[in-house]
Image 1 (cartoon, rainbow, N blue to C red):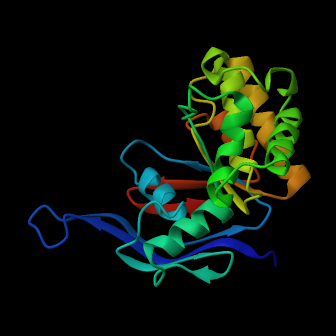
Image 2 (spheres, rainbow, N blue to C red; image 1 turned 60 degrees about the vertical axis):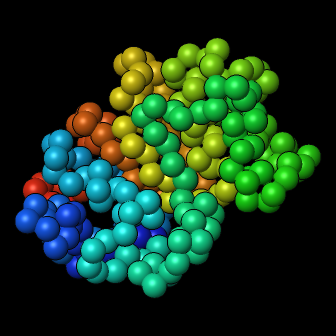
Length: 228
């Protein structure tokens, strides 16, 4: 049996706790993501999938239950420990790219490594340029991110997500703002990175054609999950 890179044990999430408007959004979820997996996360708006993604990405804490990342329980970790774990083990790709518009493509990819190391270095720049080459952008590595197409910006975001050699990449609607061809190209790139690096991917998408091309599908319905 493959090792779980993520495991949720009876995870629930509530908001407005103790108030009349208290609402439980996630209900006792048990879930495992295998190391090296490539899985889609789907569900209608309001189903709880964004909350689930935020908990897996250590951006929010569950109200009850346990989340383990690469076997490490997170419930007792402080904010600084969670930040370190998130920065070194999890990469993020967002629909809106969230690149720093004043930076070049290379500088954007360097950013998480510079933050982690406290300064830049030739080794960090070389790593960033290698990643940009892998996503087909070596020729525009020194171009300002603001002047790139949507597909190019998303490729920079993917390279940035891989910069720290994470165990897991969370991609939140990574093709949502792209035209059909760019969406297919970005999805193929994610697939290729999964195959080459063994990095696990959890991809939020409303595109069921793309979801069916993943190794598995996790569907969130009314704060509960079912897998396929």
